[in-house]
Length: 209
Image (cartoon, rainbow, N blue to C red; front, side, top):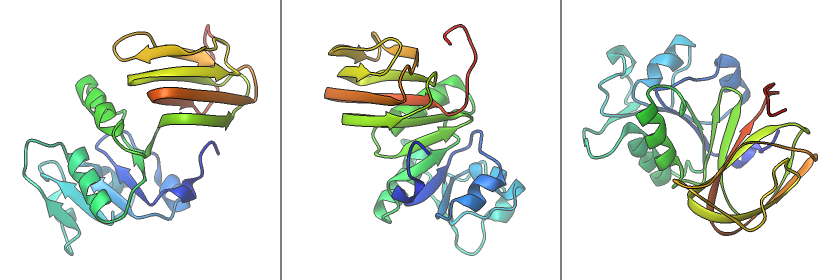
């Protein structure tokens, strides 16, 4: 694995696309559902440790045994409410699921919120994490990845098809999208700011290969 799941303290499920039940059987961590995500979990026979949000989307029959917290504040999203719960209960960092399902504005807002955490997100064939400092990743040659400055960073890479040398990435601005690994060991050094790294965890065949 690219990351070690035992470094994380919980799984946070958002109301987007979730993996199948086998994933949850493999990872023995407390599962927190943001509102309607509890419906998808229930369909797989999984009851979360806690359901959090304004609870306008969740099935009412799932709100049992005190395993829910209703927070009606409309100035924050269910994602933010769940993150506050995780922080207050020593459940961070977390593995976040369901970020990339739903409408485009929801996805962008999810990324905006995620960028302020020290967690990771998993989607169908993708892994996302925020980076500062120096990192070494062991990846298959030809792995597809993208790097974004969030909101900006200065970055140097080794082991990519299109390497960056003290390049400023910014959102909006220049970013390295759909890059490829050419070496098994990829070095990423960020001398200022923060970068979002998105790695495709399965082989993607396209014109960039």
